[in-house]
Image 1: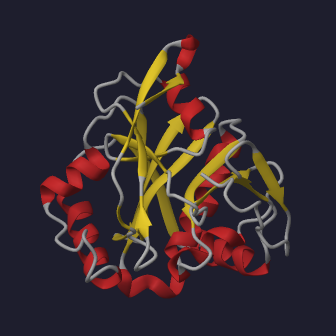
Image 2: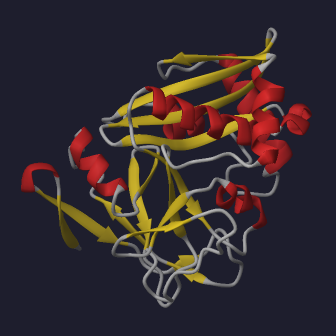
Length: 255
């Protein structure tokens, strides 16, 4: 167990798990550093943890701490420096012309849950999340955890296209999880959701959108690295990468 300074200098207990199979890179062991689940996490504290490469999943705030592996890299977009590429501009024009985006407080909506189940079955049929029970859904995305969470709802006419679960912090927005209608994949709803979250951060005067972890060898995460300019956490500080620059951090320093 370690201690990390929280808001106003208050210490927070951090716990390290034993090694377990990596969820992203088969055959490799993983370890996780996580914040005491009983700790009271106020907004400034959560912001400080985000700035140190941590991530939230349900009520758990964690960071990979694997031996000799820095594959999981925390990314964020400095929204003022972001310039969409041609494909992203096309995506935004195509979707914004027909899709309505509304902001909602977190609550259990049967329509959202049904979409979540369809998404998991289509995108992660063999993963640990594939069951998609109502209890798991609530724990993961809906139940209170101490911070400010919003649901961005995307509708194509009356049809629910996507839901983007988004945390609001003093220093930015954090993209927690997005699920969408697999039959509308051609619209690239995940990309559109991130573009809308970037615009929302700009509109709120917030400097960053936190994208969570990116693993170069994990094809399903490649889309995150296309939002440029972006910044990557190297274990000590955030490094900036512009368009076309490969994300290369010093081995062993990534969180």
